[in-house]
Image (cartoon, rainbow, N blue to C red; front, top):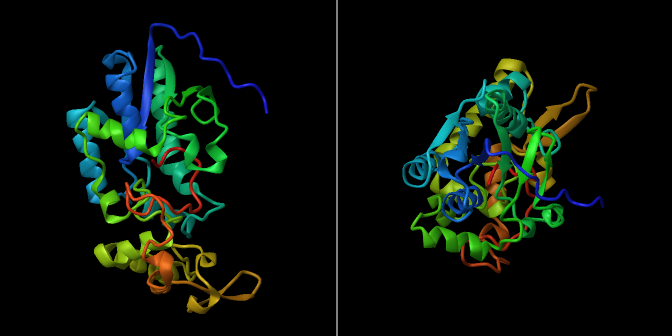
Amino acid sequence: MSEPAPRPTLPEKTIYHVGISGGKDSAAVLLWLVNESGVPRDHINATFCDIGNDHEWTVEHVELLSRTVHPVETLKPELDYYELARKKKRFPGVKTRFCTEHLKIYPTQEHIGALKALGFTVVAVSGVRADESEARKDLPEWDYSGNMLCHSWRPLIRWKLADVLAIHKKYGVPMNPLYSMGARRVGCFPCIMSRKSEIRMISINFPERIDMIERAENAFETDFGRYSSFFPSAVVPPRFRSKEYVSKDGTRHMVATIRDVVKWSLTGDRARGRYDDNQDIPGLGENPMSCQSGFCE
């Protein structure tokens, strides 16, 4: 592994940009940057990408941060989540995560590019933490972001979950209320990589989100003659897959509708949040596949 980049020497005209998702980690890094980093407030810039698949509580939480911690500018991608899926004629997948790319990375790149055009040096500040996943454990505090074409700073890289909770408490800022309902990630609601207990929670507490997904799934078949499942079929065992899908080569597969995924989510211990060993935030002990982009929490 190459040596991590040292902390760069930055000019006075430097802007520290934070992408706010509505999640706990981006809120924690904003609280730290504003209150404890020593960076002047007028050198801090925060944005939120309105992707059209956020829960209204998340949008309200970002508005709260903007009022009480630091102004947060809303960026609008060219297309929202469901419009983008229709353009692609499919939902994003684990290996084809065009949602993050088009809805968060591209608008943020454009925003940072505009700051650089004004003569600023930009530092992209992230709330990514090493203990969140195996893929993040060796990330350095400082390096260069190939996505944003600027310095990248991860000041919370060695923080634990307890530190994130503590800084919210210290400054009297509540976390996104979706966490108290059992959500693990809130940057997309639901995320295509939601765990079993999250899907169960959404189906019980927010059934309108399931209805919305069902309408979108059916619209693909009606409008394009090609069904697309919101969740990858591999998420659920074959016995839960009720929808026949014919691939371009004529091969027939059984795929899972959103209703199939909900039925599966209501079965077994993991559906009820068992095996979790962290009770500070319901469900955080489970270790599902996670997005490594750093844009969603």
